[in-house]
Amino acid sequence: MIDSLGPDTIDQEDFSVIRRSLHTWPEIGFEEINTSQLIAEKLSSWGIEVHRGIGGTGVVGVIHGLDGGKRIGLRADMDALKIEEDNQFAHRSRNPGKMHACGHDGHVAMLLSAAKALAASRNFYGKVNLIFQPAEEGGSGAAAMIADGLFDRFPCDAIFALHNWPGLKTGDFATCPGPIMASCNEFRIRITGKGTHAALPHHGNDPIFAATQIVSGLQAVITRNKRPIDNAVLSVTQLHAGTSFNVIPDTASIGGTVRTFSDKVLDMIEARMRSISTLTAEAHGCRAEFDFIRQSGATINDEVQTELAGKVMKKVVGAANVDTQVEPTMGAEDFATMLRLVPGCYAFIGNGNGEHLESGHGLGSASLHNASYDFNDALIPLGSRYWVALAEEFCSQEN
Picture (tube, rainbow, N blue to C red):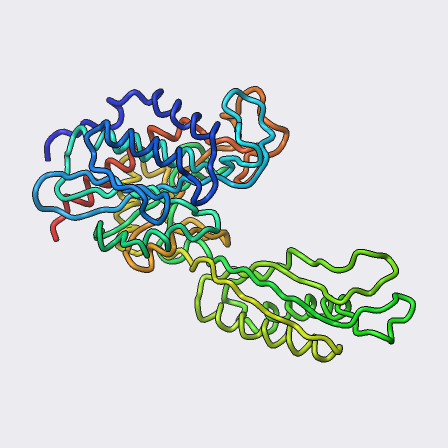
């Protein structure tokens, strides 16, 4: 191969400015109008082929290398969360109730930095597809892009994603073959009974009492129906009923989430939850409506591509700073939808323990989805270097 230009020759301060601008003006899922405009303009200015409006607000940049080679997809999510930011530093969110509290602003900056370097060097065979995905945060943006012909229009032999990870030492990398993140599923249960005066409960059918029995019964699915060696979480996070202290209401509602690494386990949990909800409500003279929404599947890394990614990580930061057998997390990631169609690897890059936080930072923690979170700009050149090295290594492999 020709000598790589690499991200070290790119002014990284420019990408910190871009990242902070994105942080200042966050946009939530499928509303990333200005974000996608900025991305498209930057890519175009570097001579990169740009396609907009994929899956709504998604952007794909295509970099053509030397003849032959493979086609790699590099994905960055770009949406913000519905969180009011606590930070008071200069680049805090100016869009009320919206915040980049998961670091997607940094993910965009890392991939843009890599895009500029790759476009300048073309030090690879084949093609690099830069995928900027909308609506990762529960909006199924990956599915929207796929439905809009993502992999038909931009075929990929493998696809990769990188997410910052607070608590992991700044700049360290971590991944693992097989499941790395769980599926994300939402359940809603509406119990309808018969309201009455609280002093005369025998005149009605109490949906609150039925709801509390359902909540207790649901825990048996995890402790008595699931094999102990199978990973799963069932969390009730909502219980709503009533508006007055002396009235038993007509309805109550329950909501929450289920996380698993296996579709088979998930199928069993959903079936048992449905039975417990409907039959328990019936036993107390009520009726239950059960809805189960499968938002994204488990994020499952391909063994071959994960081995390659780990090899590249070690070249970039040294073997001592790479964990290729990281413990999976029960958090979820929309990238799972892409991995079901194309083999690839999802990985973490350490965001540190808050040592990067500036004056004006909020009192909360530096964890993800926290109103005091901020991305660590020191990761931009490291993430960029990884993307460039991975693209060059993957595309230059023999078929």
